[in-house]
Amino acid sequence: MPVVEAVITAVVLSAIMISTVFGNILVIISIFTYRPLRSVQNIFLVSLACADIAVAILVMPLNVTYSIIGRWVFGLRVCEMWLTCDVLCCTASILSLCVIALDRYWAIHDPINYAQKRTLKRVLLTIFLVWAISALISIPPLIGWNDWPKDFADTTPCALTEERGYVVYSSSGSFFIPLVIMTVVYLKIFQATKRRLRKRAKQVPKIIQTTCAATEDEKTEIPLQNIRTCKNADNSTAVSELEDCEHEESPKSCDRNQARNGSQKTQQPGIVRQYMEQRQKISVSKERRAARVLGIVMGVFVLCWLPFFLMYVILPFCATCTVSKRVGGFITWLGYVNSALNPVIYTVFNPDFKKAFQKLLSFK
Image (cartoon, rainbow, N blue to C red; front, side, top):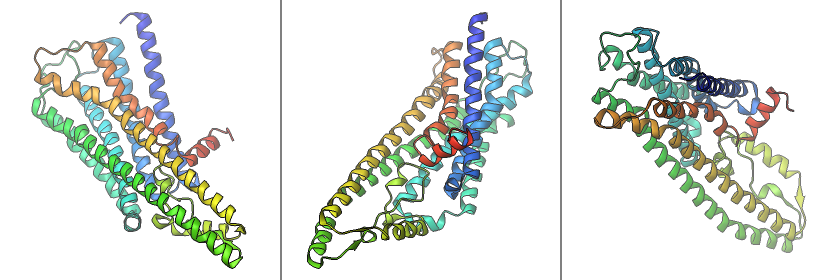
């Protein structure tokens, strides 16, 4: 690799490594130190962050060195361990994304029952299964399911095995099955939030009419807690912010907000109508934001990983298909970039994470 290209490559890839480690460490520290983020479901984000940090520390540095030097100089054993860590950590990251999607779906689909089931023990068990499945996918090449050469020299490439059976097995477990699950789950989440919004939209006029009629007839003050509204205590996603009190995962938080709202009173029907209309606009805004977040989550995930897994699956089965080292390296690093983007995607739309980051970085 020419010197200029080598320098640019080293700088860019090092920046990706540093940002990956820095961003994911911020996520972990925020969850454990910022009280509003200390929820059981956010442990899934800790697992995701740990997997992404492992990618940055165990996988990326050797890839940078390999890309710049152009040959593998660390020997067969290091090559085997590096490739195993690559598959293990990237698979754990992808499966963590899948588990987060399932957790959000269950929280919205069956919030009352799932809130009781979502215990720390259950979450930790799920995370253990994620890493166990990742190990089952990554270890087979170490025990013989591979096409690696027996004689390994400095000129021998250190590359993932192209043994066809393993390629199908690993790509299915690491990407294609999680992709199908995430797609179906996020579509169901999106449909559920749309249905809830339509239902709320139909109920609002009736609530306004009933409340205003009562105000006019009785000429009394109506406490705002009669109009049940509260901020969802589950701040892990923008989607969960759409939960109302009937689907509240934290009843205590709901009761506190209702009590606080109860100290405020409205005396005129017009104020009630204005208040309800404002709540409806907020719901519409949250619905749009939730849809945008879901689109970004799936869009970035597919954009980063689909090219790599298509290349990974097609090349062993296509004798005439070839990919240059530069293109192959770019596609590989595009997948790694997902580990740097995960803390951005899963936190930038969350006000609590923003406040925690600002506090940690002394911006506020």
